[in-house]
Amino acid sequence: MSARINAFLKLAREQGASDIHLSVGMPPQIRMHGELTTIKYRELNKTELEDLLKEILSAEELNKFNNGEDLDISYDDVEVGRFRVNLFRKLTGPGAAFRAIAPRIPSLKDLLLPPVVEKLLSYHQGLILVTGATGTGKTTTLAAMIDYINSQRKLNIITLEDPIEFIHKSKESLIIQRGVGTHVRSFAEGLRAALREDPDVILVGELRDPETISMAMTAAETGHLVLGTLHTSSAVKTLDRIIDAMPTVQKPLASMFLAQHLKGVISQKLVRSVDGRSRRAMVEVMLNTSSIANLILNKKIFQIPSVLQTSRDIGMQLMDQALLSAIEQKLIDPDDAYIHATEKKLFQRFVTNPDLLPQINLAVS
Image (tube, rainbow, N blue to C red; front, side, top):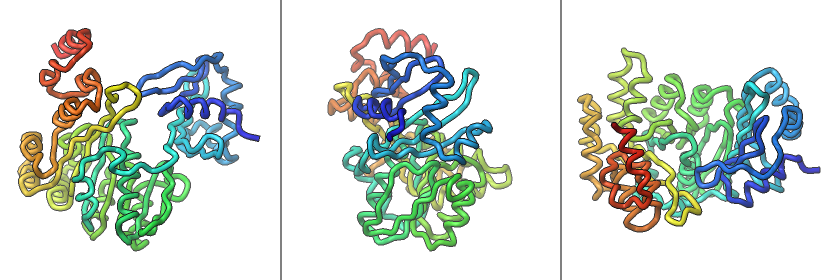
């Protein structure tokens, strides 16, 4: 007998939703193209929601949840597919957020990522970062990158994820997927173990603390290709975040590491397509050229955007350049692009909803 919660998850799949939220005192809600929509259903009460969630939890997971712990798990069912799940408790009772995982791993071309990404994945060692806010598709991009390597090269790939989302099958490469909390206690512990497992490529689901960042640096320095994520919105903010995360005495070493071993930063946002029926990943791309490395070493990271702007011929681009190009190709909604843009004056002539302009201007003033 299938879990009763499957009815909601199936509806979310059929509607093409990215997420479904279950909360006490509210009907279920689904996220469609970035916006929440309420399902026509009654308000969920505490007992009903707890009973729904119990059906998909193991005894150990239920015990942790009942003891007040948040849970990050995967839910996989033949009827509804695979979901990443976060369970939590709040003032009114339990809550849950389900993120739909695509049934197949998209390719780099499916995601319309620039060709320079393939060049980055040809490196044998160093650090590649995919950054962006929560829900901007970083995991999907990383899955496509790992699948590309898996299809092209004969390597040992170890992934550390919290939780495991896309399931990879070994192709040309050997892939070992490990879940934080299930197979290892932390990203740092998983990285420490991975270095003893003859890896060529290591995926770190999130560089969330100084210890994990330091371990990722060690892995990249010692001859491995490391892929990781940060919740930063641009290349400049990514570099600043890594350096700021380190203790004061280690900041110069962090700058030196980035200048020598960072290969590139891909910062992405999801922007509504021109027909409003989907969202596309827009990416800022920074490659670590000698000029970029010099700016990092000389504490002039703030000058990097001007280098990105003038280096499109080698594959670099600012987010605003990516947005403008996509507008001109009629790939994205110009109003949504305007909202996501940094230099908004460049986008004003494309805006179709005049109400956006005074709102944005008032906010800036």
